[in-house]
Image 1 (cartoon, rainbow, N blue to C red):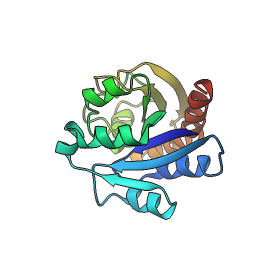
Image 2 (image 1 turned 90 degrees about the vertical axis):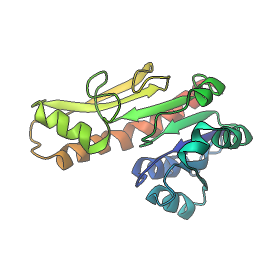
Image 3 (image 1 turned 30 degrees about the vertical axis):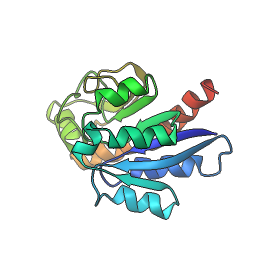
Image 4 (image 1 turned 180 degrees about the vertical axis):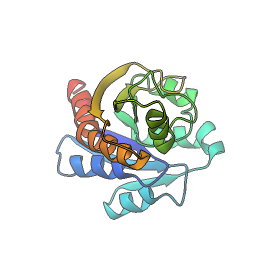
Length: 189
């Protein structure tokens, strides 16, 4: 069995989608959802889907607590799905090429610290872009600079609000993120 661990900070629509995608899979499974926000909706969604949850604070993330929990779970892939903190270098070093992230824009544009969610979508609108998309990439020590695995585009020429852009981006995320996770784990079987 290939183990997937998801990190998320908010509502968890991507995490929920990934859990559902692998729910009846006999070779791959989401074994835990980790969150730095003990009140995050993602924890409630994971619990409702019978997935183990772990909440932690910033000190526990950058200390030994989170790493020790990950070592116990032996993840084959760590998936950042709306996780807003910079991922610690000591965890990246412990799981080389086993941590991926999804970004709601076409990197390298609209990436970096503070560029997440509605901030990205509003920046895309403000710059009068006609298309945006998603980037799924490996995580390294820099925000949004890891090797790109997949990019997918969508037209936003008809969008006038960041919420409309977000809807189109979420459609791409929900369609492609589980597939990429599946493909990465299948390649490593």
